[in-house]
Image (cartoon, rainbow, N blue to C red; front, side, top):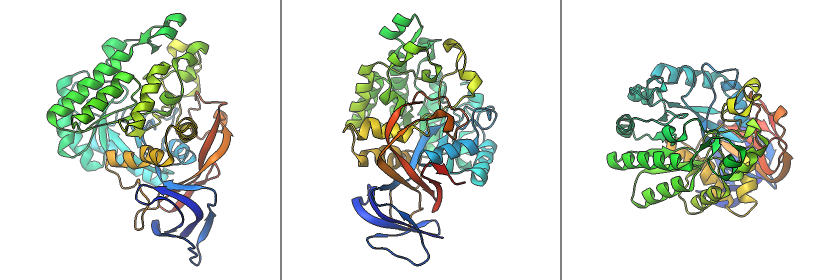
Length: 428
């Protein structure tokens, strides 16, 4: 099957920013140029639109196995397609945790059969994510895992984390750190600061993230392995990554759209849709994240899509789980917060949401070139739209952006040459 994206603006690191048609044939990019008109091709008119390498979300929770009431591969990948993502990496904190090769292979097979987009698997660092004994790291990498992480909790045992770095390093793969010292964070419900004091709620101090990130970076530097700091949310963690990069440490880092766009002041309404871990921070931390993006300290933007069932979030704030859906709002929030404010250019966003995630996880993609798989996202940068949680494809529809007006969204998602989303409607 041939698909011609006609008359669009193509933005990709290898090509630059050019006006061109893109021809897709048999799942691959067959030609890029002006005035292409192959016989028998389905035409997708892209005049006034932007064609970018398929977006990759390197940090999502598809909740399968064991928590399908929150999300599963079918609903989660349809949400990804709706949001413009052609691939996602799903985290290991399922029930049971993904801590062996059999589970990695099982998820991959199910995703191949039923997923709307490509799914890559992140295995656990420790067995059962208990932080006591290494999981089958080598076997999981051999089975296709792209990284390991005990995301959802910090690996307290420094020796265990060092061993994980060493083993992952043998395969050239990263260990993804959920950097927050639980002894300091304790049972805190939100960012510790002025707002938590006013609300009388126990806080999670920023220093808990700073300390954990610094320790994990130091261990990676010592053993010369790859470490990726997930969902960075504090100025101290940004600076720790920045200084480590200057020393040549093999460290990368991501931020989330919600940590870029929302502050802890949203918690005045005690709306559980705003409860997340790490928590929403104060404005000075957000400014540090912006600076980290501007100077290249931050490598990627990832949604940390963490859906929960309605009844779990519809409780008193202290009892609600942390996290919310992010796949379908991620791009719109990023374009609204970064691109339309002039804080980042479109090529910067392509690198943050496609090129760099592929590089960090060792995936093919992140650029548009002839002979490469046709994973493409088509954007309407000026489309104004309102988030309607009830119409989202994800099962866990809690989102802090419900009712928000955003500018910019994906209007087509193409995976391996197949059109899987068009104008907000998922086609698979």
